[in-house]
Amino acid sequence: MTPKFFVVLSGSSFDRKIDFSQYNVMLPSYYFLSRRKKKFSINAFIPKCKEWFLDSGGFSLLSKWRDYPFSLEQYALLIKRKMPTYAATMDYPCEPELTIVERTKKHSKGFRMSVKERIMKTIENAEIMLNNYDFRRTKIISVIQGWTIDDYRFCIEEMHRRDLLSDYVAFGSMCRRMRIAEARKLITKQKEYLRKFTDARAHYFGIKISFLKDLTIFRNVDSFDTAAWTHNQGTDGRKRMYACSQEELRRNYERYIAKLSEVLRLNSLQASLYI
Image 1 (cartoon, rainbow, N blue to C red):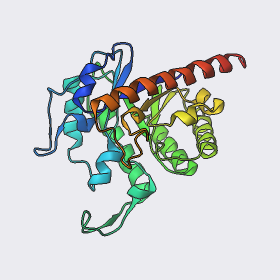
Image 2 (cartoon, rainbow, N blue to C red):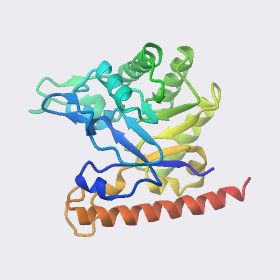
Image 3 (cartoon, rainbow, N blue to C red):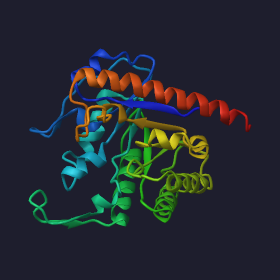
Image 4 (cartoon, helix red, strand yellow):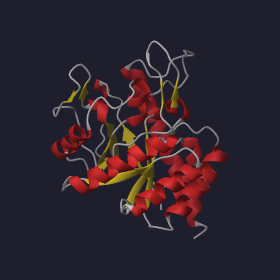
């Protein structure tokens, strides 16, 4: 089966010029957040699309602050008001750059939150969201966190013990992986261990298109999201992360979607030969 993909919006006015009606989209929580007031706006733009997925935006937000700039209650209220098709639980990513932050001007006190502590906070938030709120029209997706396979196993076991694994889960801390061989081994073991408890579909946050060219990874990923089209593609030689103009965004979007669609088409064809 071909993985479902969600296009992460750029956050610029260019989003209003793209026809997303034939695609699924993902919006991180900070697209709705007034950073000055630290409150959510219910008037933020949501395009016409097939399905949309709300993510808590943990990696981006926790890279800037020690914790989320909003409460779990505020996040739950945002879900109730905007009624996305899917919403991820409020997780705590476990990338190495987040688990140890040295003393800097930005983080004057410095802090060290272990991977285990981040996993437990992720589990506790999932438990509160799934047991204390009625979201009705939104499917809540439990996020499984970790960095090593043992971390993910621990998280899966604890979520199973607390009955937090539904038929659709998501794996976090995947977007910073650099090597295909590492990702292939990790994803294979994640899915193998998950199947001991549930036959759930698995979403992977921010997985690279180069990884999806690998047939083993492709066959284990049920859905994923991508914001890669919003990045500088290196065509102008500048050292910057994001596209700087609407014209650049337009070119990047058209090029990236065409490339991604071709990868999915070819791998779907190849995978069908092994059925």
